[in-house]
Length: 385
Image (tube, rainbow, N blue to C red; front, side):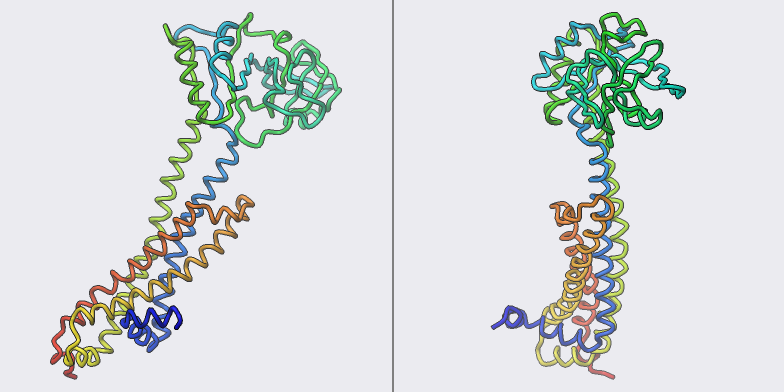
């Protein structure tokens, strides 16, 4: 005995529901189509929000793993001292600590000139790599050029450039940073700290960037830095870049809720369609229902039969809507982020499940009034032509 036959034996109302719905196949198909469209809309819009979030997260890269420490200008601190850097290194544990000096200066190569950001960094190789030449872990001489500056001035490794009034040989062109970068090296030049001049830094730094293995470690490091350096007075400000990620996730959570709400409107419309189908069906079968009531069929049985019809419409519509939603998700994720398998992420499967469940519930609720109206009508009135 097949599973379907066992269901029919256990739930005879399903047999009646299938028979009644097959009487007018076109009308039943159109009602189910409304559920299909509603389920597809909710699931697809939910997955669309997940895709947008994944794309934004990819663009940001490991931003949540970094923090930036700057002198608190409001309290009169203009730079971070060598002692501050030592303290930061001590509490950063496994994090990569990069002290930075910053200024803007004219950059020239041959007859080409531009104004770019100049970073004084001793250990750029701990954060960046070069596509042309090399990015040493310790920058003792020469300069590293960002990809955008190199393209603009047609600079290659081995060329000699002028930064302000200083001349440097380019030892590497940095790899382009696609996502959000702590120092945005694409439009910058990096030179050794000992060659850095300007803004009267002395032996101090304009900021310290710390890159940690995880966002949790970044948060722990930020707390430790505040406790260490701001023990007596607010010497530094610590910006946790993970807060940007948190804000983006919160935004996309709101966006997802809005998109799902928009998709739910189509299911409400489908519910009205099913309500109409059920009402028409009960009117057409008025005498049949009257006969059933006259021979002893209880009101609850009539209600159960009509709700089974509505639920079956919702189940069929939800099933095909879920299949179409999966195909839509595969195409969407392939086109937007080139990762179709994101469709099967737990959150997306949850959206599909919720859409199917909402479709079935909407169908059953739409059948309540027709079921109540048919069950409460007096058999004598129902049999009257």
